[in-house]
Image (cartoon, rainbow, N blue to C red):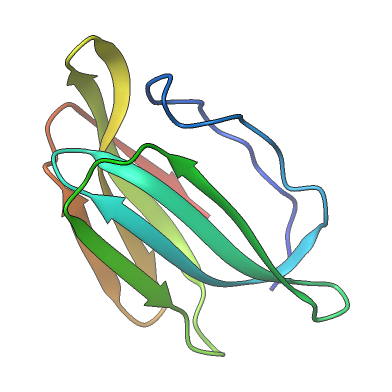
Length: 123
């Protein structure tokens, strides 16, 4: 199920490393890896391109967070919605404080503390 890329954000502090874009067009999202605590500290993605080559991008984020989550999507599974919250922490005003992923088969999360302003993005 391929559609066009959508770019949102950016949110976060200044410890997340260099920002960069997806340069090889994705065909299918394979999975995520997140590290989190009070906020979503770090995230990376794996996807298949049009030729079925696997790409892993990221991680974006800092070194914090005591919990880790690896999410692997089943072959027939796809993300339908991304929910979360954005709020201040410390000196940063726009940090992702929680994420919840809704697929056609399950709900993952919420991960993080959920403080701040909620958002929802249908995909």
